Length: 117
Length: 109
Image (tube, rainbow over the protein chains, first blue to last red):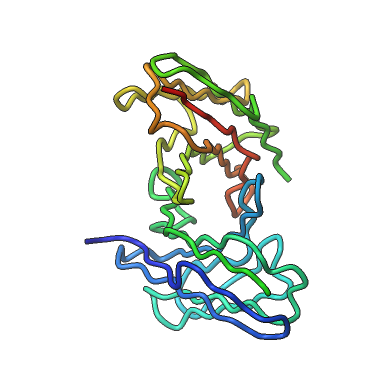
């Protein structure tokens, strides 16, 4: 089955701890993305990666870090510097966002709900 | 940057009714997608439609790029249509999708 998986589904963190959210895709997509969703709001871009070993900050990158060592994996670390990390985190991928047309279509994983205690 | 406005913010329908959701955007786009977020949070692609009209079963979408809006039509609504519908666009000079705030749809049986 091709798709995007995220783990864990639910994550609880104590204040001051770093946590890492996993995102894996077997769609052979070049581009991957991390979004944050707060209750009643749309999605905001945290980081994106066009290709292995390259990534760019999105609109709300402060307090987050990423890596892209493999094409299929794009983990997100929520650091203790993130002031309000409780949110729903969504990972997405697309074939190559630099290409126009339907190849730019983004597909989403099921999400991780992070709660800071 | 590009702005996206969705309307209405909230919609309650009786099962079997039809509805139209609107997405206005502030600049030319080369990517426009409609998504449905189910009650468990999963976002499902409905349409990739930066221009023109598409249909998929009871759903159809039209984007009038020159007038900077897109419409999502849901006919004969079912309770499983409930959730949040998002419009997302990428401007011609942009490098990211910008999401609207969504329309919350509740379909009652």
